[in-house]
Amino acid sequence: MKLVTAIIKPFKLDDVREAISEVGIEGLTVTEVKGFGRQKGHTELYRGAEYQVDFLPKVKLEIATNNESVERLVEAISKAAYTGKIGDGKIFVYDLEQAVRIRTGEADDEAL
Image (cartoon, rainbow, N blue to C red; front, side):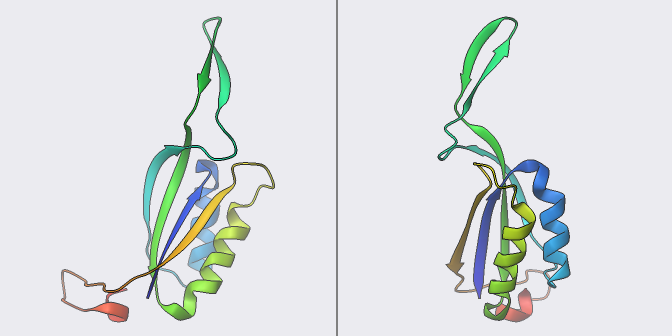
């Protein structure tokens, strides 16, 4: 099993959700986060005063999946989240040792 974590632009969330549904992924966790990478924030104007915004709003997706689905999932996220501009995000894939569905007690692949 794998845990796929993706950090994307907030306005791409619906596109990514549709794309992962099309490859057969049924569940995900979404968290609103802030951060920066090469984008390094930007300058905004508020009531005539300029100020630096260091952390940009992003969306973090966490998706547990079986080993066979990882490539299709990563490809679906990559295509759906792509804008071609700096700050499109990143995808991380981790090994997932165990998963348990609390309601039924199912474990591992059955729990996903």
